[in-house]
Image (cartoon, rainbow, N blue to C red; front, top):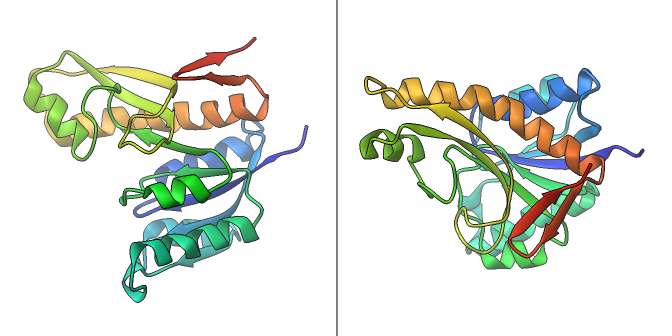
Length: 203
């Protein structure tokens, strides 16, 4: 079975990238990261990638006159490395309809809530402020909305009355590191079937 080629877009530490790389090394994820792209100069995720001999590129959004031009450069890099999937791993920019329509390959994201609850920014704070008993994380396909695409996998964590945003974030992050590699492996096995909004995981 050929390995999936992944282009990872990230803005921060890159812990989800590391979880995917660790899964691949352990033989649990039949995929390879072929390029890492970041909008942040000096982002830790770039250092992680470089340490694994993965092409790691900072593309400065401010060097482009329009968002469309910046995203066109991202897509150029994704296509140059012949990626099968675009993986958003803490990428802190909302992709435009232009990007999504021109990607030509599926885009995955992981969001720190049980979608459709608490979409958008600061999902962990939204959960704490709302007083929910459970939250978690969601791996989903990206569509033209914000955190609205078809759901592939979810993981649930408890929310305690004394929780801070930081404590809940750490608990959710642990689950992110489990479910994101698992979702990619399911894709590599051809077990993810998307029918409209519903994702069916075949045996």
